[in-house]
Length: 218
Image (cartoon, rainbow, N blue to C red; front, side):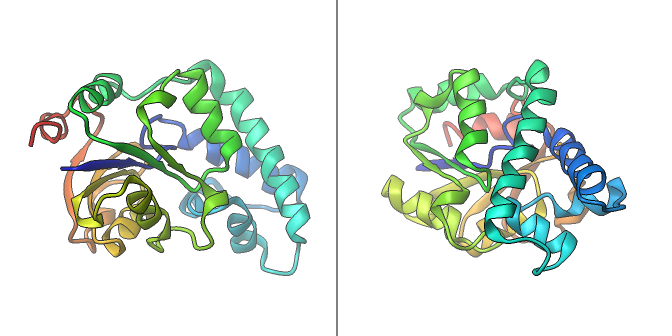
């Protein structure tokens, strides 16, 4: 393949449970909700304000209020997750191998820069990525393909020459909508949840998977 595009949360690091916990705390303890874990978990995609709209409807908060609440949620998440911050097994070697083979790589995430910087800088991996597309860089969230199409354009490669790494169905669907294949990292969702998609290369628990490692030299 000519390029790799990575989702971040749940794909490069196993942190989605911490995001769900931070959201559940905010929604219930601070905003008066009564949402179960099972109700919150499926909403863990897209921009943070979109999560608030899905949970409380479009009229509860102003955009400024949602931006403020989103940042507060991310601060909670970072404090809780920082002691556990590490790449998934095999990913450091995978990134270095792709880098040595001259394969351009990008981040395509619905996270805000505050969270992307938290990961890339604390793990010292920013140099692997030529392009970063965050929530602030797109109008339409996954499963719309804008995030991945923009990353491909900025990498100067055709969408069909990109492989996307994702962990959630909506993200893999965004890759499909962009005309890209997807590798699914099964940190948060079961393979059966992706049955409606035709662009899945493989499912893997981490980057030590032989099929995943073979993508560098394929």
